[in-house]
Length: 77
Image (cartoon, rainbow, N blue to C red; front, side, top):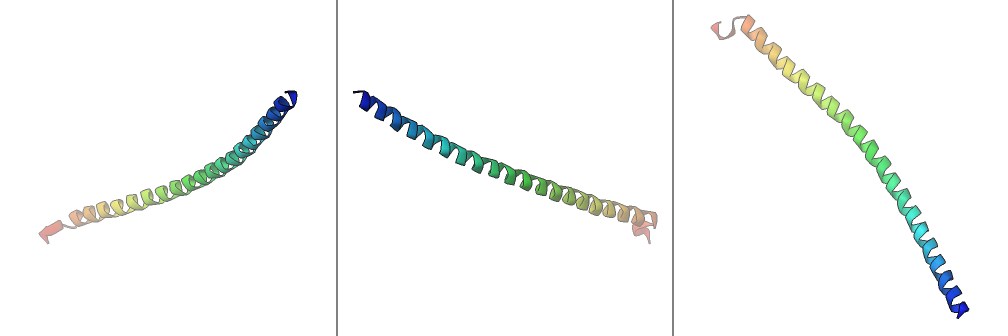
């Protein structure tokens, strides 16, 4: 009877050890995914800034062209 109990405890210990190993492996994968997500987020932030400044520049150029057109007389010439 004690041998059966000891075997069950041993089997349970082995099972718990396997679960801990799987958890550690999954934890490593999750950390790697988090690092990749952070890196991608930083790249997207950079692209967002470039698009913002590009759009601002284009809109500014259009506004300045319209002002220059109006100052030169517009459609009156």
